[in-house]
Length: 445
Image 1 (cartoon, one colour):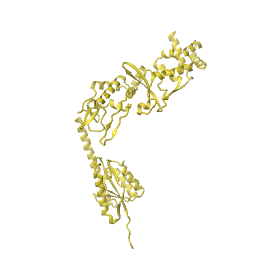
Image 2: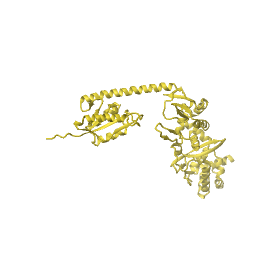
Image 3: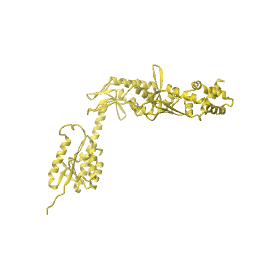
Image 4: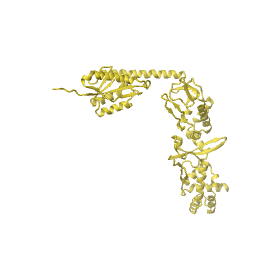
């Protein structure tokens, strides 16, 4: 009787934490794969055979299991395509005891054996399981000690004012591992700080700098990948205004140390900006509302990017310019909105003209007169007709907050399209208009 041995399908898993060296013709992953292949060849008499697919995770940490090749391997195990997993060392599979225990449970449930080439054990025996747990505990201990050393080195380096790498910050370039001022970008940084000290509103500041085309940093990574800058949003500007790097300092766990790089912002300007920021955003917004008219606040909507519109303003050469800007344009860096920011004066004039025509109808005059009589029984229909016949005069006599209340009572919504404006009026809300007319009548008397 001829005994035919069952083929044992072996999957080779390799991993390297960093991408350095992977571009070489024969790299660390290849060396691991070659050693595992040689081990499988030594077990050929037992029916072992290497699967043709390679499971290589280059540039992935062993501290978690979020790795593409490992996920593909687990899927093949679920599909019953693997009998044995071969690795060069156990820490190639995982450096986390918790993750490794979960993986071993998954392997055991599906009858899959785990073998480490250089540590000579497999998980089919109790001794192999004990050895695995001991080795894995030491691997995790080594990882934690290494992490502690790295953190200590990072803290010591920052205390010396050294920049420890990462994405280059706007305003600086990296030369010989040091930060060097990029003067063109530095001018943008100074402008942002200076304008915030004047405007005292991040929303208004973002609307202004987006109009000027201010973008985040464009840079080329070590892998020669170009990362294009995007239009600045409120979150980016807020972080920028709080970045002490621009004072020439390095921070580490809320501690500040003098940096080895040059400052971009003077201390006096920094203090001025942060004196403003100490006030709550709500307080600053209320001050802006009192000082700057925005009667269409809360009723305007952009049809282009389907979002509400926020009032904004800026001063140029002493002149105030007001706008309404789509919220998505401000918050989400919406570059495709066909509406964008629009002049506040122009849209407010359009709404007033629509109101003027609607308020001259007989129904509007009667409704306003009936509402006005409740506030002042002496008022006549003729006075109401005269007031509604020239809504502009009444409008100009109102304070910004009163204008806003009046618009909200008479207007349901103002929707801005690229080619038109849709206005839905609410002529049932005549009480606020009647109150304004009666108040103006008392002042005139």
